[in-house]
View 1 (cartoon, helix red, strand yellow):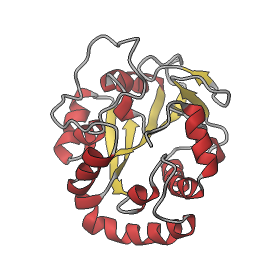
View 2 (cartoon, helix red, strand yellow):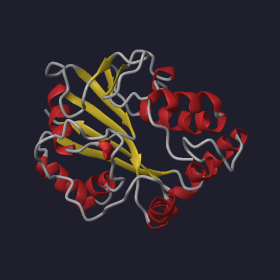
View 3 (cartoon, helix red, strand yellow):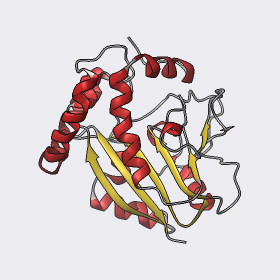
Length: 245
């Protein structure tokens, strides 16, 4: 089965799949733990699940859905300067046509000291094989994530390159290059996670190779293994960027 085609399809799978909710619960809790007190903007609200963990979040997406607060493009945010203390986004950055436009906009709408908290695909030797062989979204490590230019109004919002987050934040020199390009932003944390449980869960497919009851013990095991094996086999990156001004 291919990936869902719209937010309603994602929401239907979410509601029918306990193991998926258990996996994402851990991810949402991790993301919220890095947020500062104050007003939070969610970009890519999709199926509207973050509000269970952060009820006051302003939830947005480029595609309309009844549970969203606003429909907007992350590369053209319709908010005033300094409007938010946090921006949170799960599986959004690698879908953006011009990531540089988003970070310029994020820098503008964040308050001084505000944070961008992202959870994205992470490319490691093991995950690269899996993503290339079994995942419908491409992985192109040869692209320049800083390329700017016109935004295609007809672009499919699900078009993606799963390599983008790793190219921007995967290694220390990548993070240094990011901070040179965006002088008002600092990458203060990059954490690898999700070794086995994410691919075994099947994500937003209807199948799963692990029951929901195994998610918590497997998460505990993965937290012990990530410091040793994360560079080799992690499937995800948790990234925290802070506004310097």
